[in-house]
Length: 330
Image 1 (spheres, rainbow, N blue to C red):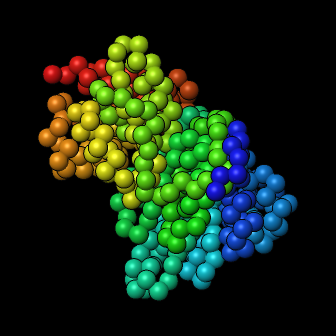
Image 2 (cartoon, one colour):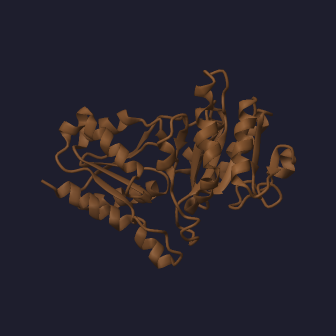
Image 3 (tube, rainbow, N blue to C red):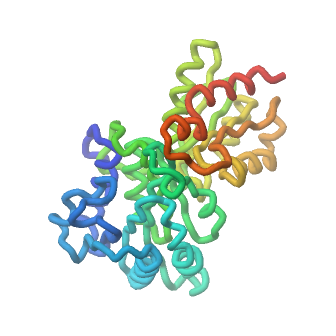
């Protein structure tokens, strides 16, 4: 139930969602590097140690493998850990615990054990942190049965689907667009944003643009600016990548007859390809009157120089150029 609407930054929305769930359920706890005294690498846990104490806000050793494995084990015994992986790139060190332990455990034990753990991953570029700290790796986890993957892009969705992820009885990869931590927006306090349900963020009739996470903001800006050119873009935000709300995309494509997909992760093997394939396999394919376009990050490492970083990730002008091309394609 929504209590009130507040203006919050993304980092405040994350902290508020975690704190509310920890107050409501004593089995929920937070663990990770620098989450306690330091307040989190991105300031998302400031003050939580003082409120909940060191038994529930746990500063861990610098070992993502140990952190992720301990969390999976704790979840299997009835606890609800939230793991702050910080930079998503560091999840590479935790892959065995997540992919080989947390993800298949419920299946392998016949459903008798639940694994309610949230792995928070700060994703993408925009901070000048270079190739080892700027990757968007959501497609890796979308490939693994047993994991749910959420990638919200607005403060309200970031807040509401984090609450849903903490309450879910399965391991959830929760992707935070770190370039937006300081972005402000309305948050409906108390509202749960359901996992597995997308939302049309802007209505349009000429082309469907599917986008999530950091790129959602740029996609909405591109759609707004194209109105002056007579191009009406329907922006669909899946919010959840696994399980994907395919139907909301199909419905929109049938309406517009065109599809573009925008994300900041690498184009090759990116999740945009999966969405394109699902539309190609559906009856929406017969409604398409132009190719499906992917607007994605370049297949290269993220440079540290700001001007070069801007080149390898789609900006508003890149999105607009592709949408114009798609709409004018006969």
